[in-house]
Each structure stands twice: as C-alpha cells, then as structure tokens.
Image (cartoon, rainbow, N blue to C red; front, top):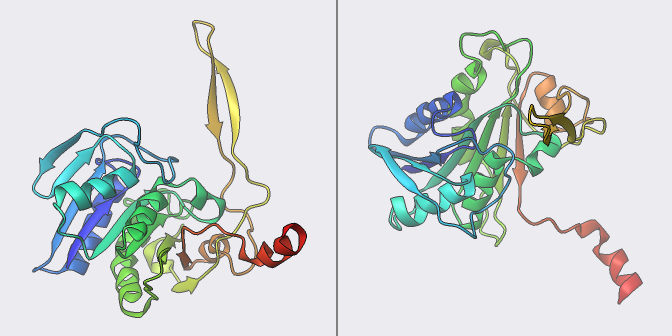
Length: 261
C-alpha cells in the first residue's frame, strides 16, 4: 500500500511523527509512506489552496517533503508532483494537536487536506488528538492516538463505507483526551456544535502603537449534544465521523422550491 500523509501543524510537529508510525504499520514492510507537509504551521486554514501564488517544495529526506503551502496544497503536490501521478492508495492527515470535532471541522487544515484527497478520488482519513487535563502531562500527549491509531485506521479500511460518489466520503477521527489505557472504544458520531464556543478577536497594541488582533477560541470540553463527536470524546471514546464536502442543506430544498420556483 502507498500512503501519503500530511498535516497542518507543520513538517516538524510531533503529531506528524505519530502519524508516520501509524502509516508505516498500515502500509506494512512492502508498502510506501510518503510525507508532504507544510514547511510552517497552517492551523486554521481550512481547505485553502494557494491559487494566486506558487508553492515552493523541498526534499527533506527519502520520501519526505516540505511545501510552503496549506495541507490541501501538500496533497496536490504529493499526488501530481512528488508521486508524479502514481496515486496513493490512502491519504492520512494529522495527527493534529487538539481536537477537530464540532465546529472546528469547518476551520481545520487537517480536515482540509483529507477533503482535498477525497475530491481527488483518494480514500482519506483525518486524525486529531483532543487535549485535556487527564493527558496533558503525559510523556507523550499523543498516547491515545499512537496506541489506537493504526487499529482505528485499519477498522475503517476494512469496514468503513467508501463510495464512488462525486463528493466522496472521507473520515474525521478524534481521539479522546485520555491516557491510551482509558480509551473505551470507538463511537460513530455526528459533527457536533458547541453553542457557547465561538471564535472572536482579542485586540492588542504593539510597542510602536500599531493595533493588532489575535484570533481567540473558547473552551473545548463543552456539551455538544448526545451522539456528537465532541461528547463521544468527552465520554472517553474515539469519535469517527463520516464527512462529505457537499454543503447543500438537503432538508431545505423542497421547502425553498415551493417558495421560489
């Protein structure tokens, strides 16, 4: 199996090393693991592509490349340049430092990389590690992802739904904020919404008097409803969510036709 991996935390992020180990276990001794990751952190860029300027790419080692672009750029670079058209069998994105559950899905560069792979017709899984007080001081904060990641990916490859629709299914996996031994199992969950958590801005003046704005988030361990990815993680489970890039509100189409057509 040929696996392409990327992330949004950057080529030197510790979560990427965790993902390399997961990918190596899945690919097996006869397989190939290729890394194309952002040269610098790209958290929060979503499905951005560098459409208006070129992306520099540099070989860092055998099957290892850094690109000055977004995770989606890296997937495109991997498929069409690094692999020179020899398409991967699977794209893995992560392991992100912090959860990409709930509304975070819409901002996540980790998900953006997996989404681009799905649009290119390649099976894709995004993996993220929820952070919390129960695991933050572990020697390896990615312990849950490291110990359960390969089994979760393998379960999806063997039992997951992989369709051929134009907007293909891809998967969002979030590991709970717990030591690996305390993880209870897998729950299939919907994308939740933390009602009290929204991004905002925090203004700050520089020593020169110029005004800058920092984007700020909110607490993450907030109830997002029964059956949600957020709650599955809070309850100690690995959350697995099937996603599509199609944003159509299908439940509103008939009503809108009645009103407008």
